[in-house]
Image (tube, rainbow, N blue to C red; front, side, top):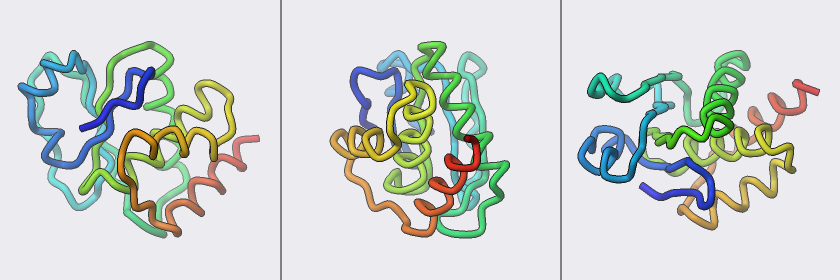
Length: 140
């Protein structure tokens, strides 16, 4: 898992979401899981946990995308150290994190995405990228 410095957000894969020792050692207090194909994480009671069953491609419900973005945005704005994880940590986690940073700090989405991929390797699904852009445009 990689922190998107200086923000209180880490991006990881499914295994990172269950590495509770590393999560606690990093000071992380919340986990946001974004994968429909992964089983729900069973975190310790001390951690905030939210799950949004997103596909890594097209076919996501826009309301579900909006909820995921807003959840991460509010955790960022509250300065709650948060791990955002999905299957491989290469597409859904980086793009939802970038969208949340964009909305939280009112910065350009493309700039936020560039910041995220500077800290974490990414392989963003073009279809998911299209859905996120459409979701962000729809909020204005």
